[in-house]
Amino acid sequence: MLNMPVRSATFAMSLIIGTVFAGESVAAARAVTVAQTRVIPACTRFVDASAAVGGTGTVARPFKTIAAAIASAPAAAIICVAQGVYRETLRPGIKPFTLAGGFQRGKAFKVRDSARYISKAQGNGAGSFIRIEDPGPTGNQLTAIDGFEITGYSQAIYRDFYVSQRFDITNNNIHDNVCAEPSLAGGGFALNNVSGTVRGNVFLRNRCDRGGAGFLNDSLNENSVAILNNRVEKNAGTEPATSHGGALYFFTNRLRITGNEFIENTVTGYGGGLFVGAYTPGGQFTNARMSWNIYRGNRAGGSGGGFFCDDGANCVSEHEIYDGNCGANIYVDGGSDGSGPTIAKFNHVTSVNGRAVGCGAAGAGVRIDKADLVADTYSFTNAIFWGNAAGSDFSVSCERGCASARITVTYSMVQKQYVNNGGLIITFGAGIAAPKNPLFAAPVSGDFHLKSRGGHFTPAGLVPDTVSSPALAKANPAGASNLDPACAGNRSELGAYGNSAEASCVP
Image (cartoon, rainbow, N blue to C red; front, side, top):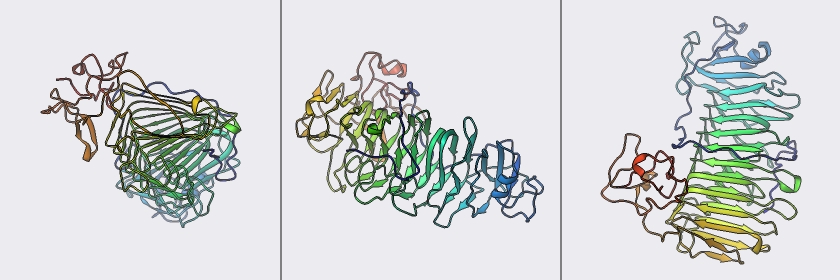
C-alpha cells in the first residue's frame, strides 16, 4: 500500500537514511496518567493573564500575554507562565525559547504544579498556539513547550522549516484540537525537521485527516525524535476511508517510541494507534524502535488497529503488548517496486484478543499484506499469541512477489494454522509451543505478567500464585535471560516481560 507522507503541501520529502537505536531499558517504561510537572526552571521572563496591562516581564510586573514576553525576551529565554487562560496564536519567527506553564498565581513564581495551576492556551478552532515557518530557529537552538493545557486549535503546535532545530514537547495536556481543513496531518502537533523529545504528555480527542494526535516528518534526513511515556487516547484519523495513523503518523530518520499507552484511538483506514511509514520511491527511509508500549482497544476501518509498519520502513518492536485492537492488533505491509522492502522484527511481544474490523468478532493477531516484488522480511520470536480468532494468529495475503517475502516465527506460543490468501509462506522454526492458556496475572485489568508459584511482578513486590504459566522458561535461550531477575532461572519467559526485570520467578 503506497502511502505518501505529504499531507500539508508545505511538507516536502527528501532522502532519509537512518540507523536503529540501541537496546532499551530492562524494566517496563510506563505512560503518565496525568500530564504534570513541578520543576521550577531559571525563569527569565514572567507572564500572568491576570496582570495589569503595561507589565515589564519581571516577577513583580509580569506581562499579561505570552506574545509580549516573546517579543521582549532574548533568544533562549525561559518564559514562565502563571495559571490562567491565554487566547493566543504565537508566531515567534527565528527566536528560540522555552515556555514553562503551571505556576500558581500570586506566589511570585515560586510554586509550580501544571496539573493543578493550569496555564491554558485556548484556541478558537483555527490556527496554532505556536506556529513556526520560514524563517525559524535552526541547529542547536531549542524551542520547548512544557506544562500547558492546549486546546481548541487546528494544528496546536506547528513547525515546518527547511533547516532543522531542537524541539521538545513535554508534560502538556493537549486535547480537542481539530484540523480545520482536509489534507492536513497532526491535530496536536505537526513538526518537520526537528530532533528532540515528546514526553509525558496526554493527547486526548484530537482529530485530523491523518495523525489526530501528532505528525512527524524529516525532509532533511538528519533528525531523531524520542516519543516517551505519553498517554495517547481517543484521537482520530478522519480522512474518509483511507486515513493512516489515527493517533500518531510518523516519518522520521530515527525514532524511539517507548513507554506510551495507545488507548481507543480510531482511524478510517490503517494504523489506529501508531503508524510508522517511509516514502521509499522518494528516497525516504525510516528506522523506528518501539519498546514497552501498550496498544489497547484501538480501531482501524481497514487494518492495524494497534500498530502499522508500512512502505519500506524498518520497525523493531520489543516488550510490547497488543490487546483487543480491532482490524488486527498488528499490520505490516510491503515496500514498493524499485525501492526498499519493509522490515519488521518483533521480539518478546504479547498479541492477544485481536478483533475483526468493526470489533464484533474475534480477529487476527497479525495481518501481513504484499503487493510488490521487493524482499520484505518479518520475524517474530519469544512471543505469546492468545485469544485471537481460531487459525488467525496470522492472516496473510499476497498479490505478487509472494516468494520474495521471508516470514519466520520462532520460540513463540502460536497457532501454526493461519489464514492465507495468495501464497505467502510463514516458516515456523524452533521453539514453537502449542497454544495454551498463558495464565496472565489479571488480563481484564491489563496486567499481562505471567502467573507463577514463584511469584509474578507487581509494583509492590512479587506475588506468588497457585499456578504457573506454561510460557515460563520457553524463550530463546541464546542470551535471552541476562536481563531477568535471578529468580527467573536460566531461560527467559515468552511474552512482553521476558528478558526484563519484570519477568516472573520460576517455581
